Image 1: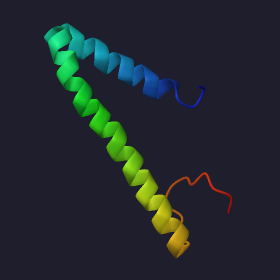
Image 2 (image 1 turned 90 degrees about the vertical axis):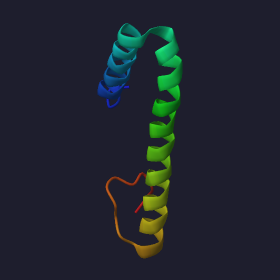
Image 3 (image 1 turned 135 degrees about the vertical axis):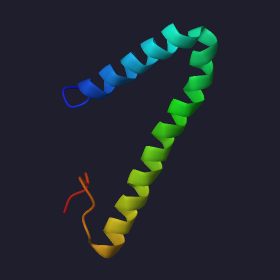
Length: 66
């Protein structure tokens, strides 16, 4: 959790702002957007990891043994 606290803080802040501005209905609509952001980032990390494994080029931080 020590490495992820800022991400949790940003997510909580975004939730509070969306709820205050648009209420619960806006939060339900915004949930799809934020889920898309999370899934998109996971796909991008997976693709760059696979490219790195195939080409032996390191992209960012790869959590696999070198």
